[in-house]
Image (cartoon, rainbow, N blue to C red; front, side, top):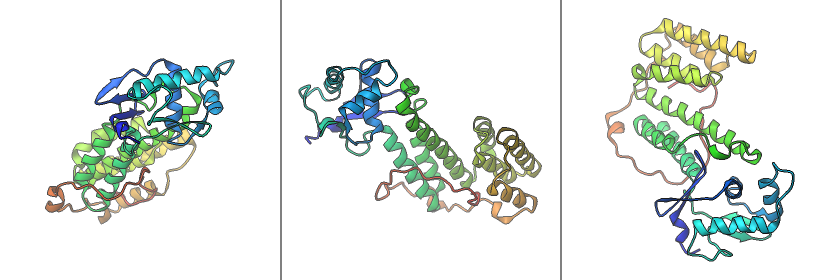
Length: 293
């Protein structure tokens, strides 16, 4: 590897895009972008040529020839790494009987998003909710629309789209958890109301909204929210609320001291952010039933 691939960034949190030396590059027509999407979904694994053809042309009556695929690969190489000949590359490489993407860590926006969410979760666990919320804001700002927005109807992309959408929803909840822990409950009620309208079947949103209302001195409204949650789950899923929602309802009824905001020290609010050692490329989520912040 020569290091030239460090100029290439690939984006999937929205329409599929590529940026080289800070400037967007034209990725060509739909089939050529599908070739790139298939390799992105493979996450560095080699895709055999015949499998790549099946994926890219699986929605048609026939599979294109190998020569057609080779033409698209050459087209992608011309825009992603123009310093190389069309038959060779450091980013889009020929590996074994197929092709793979070879990118340095952090060159795909979904990977950066996952790492930032993990960092935000660690900061929150360390009692630094303001820094956690800032880090999660940075993660969520990477999104430009639904994942693989221009190719979201392609069958081989759908699992990644679903996984990334769930990861984004969890990151939104984690950010709101951090802001609640930082004592921002009064200003969060409106945002949380919007969240439960957008994601009515995710119980964590209802739990956070009830917590924010209770901390704002609105116990009756908090209990009304939990009744709405129960009704929504019953009507749309035929299910009862999970253990976390049931526990928060009991806690609110009894003015449980665990509902009080956690103390955030001045030093924690003012401490400059320092990168955390290591990178874990998975999205951290609060487990059902975890105590509210």
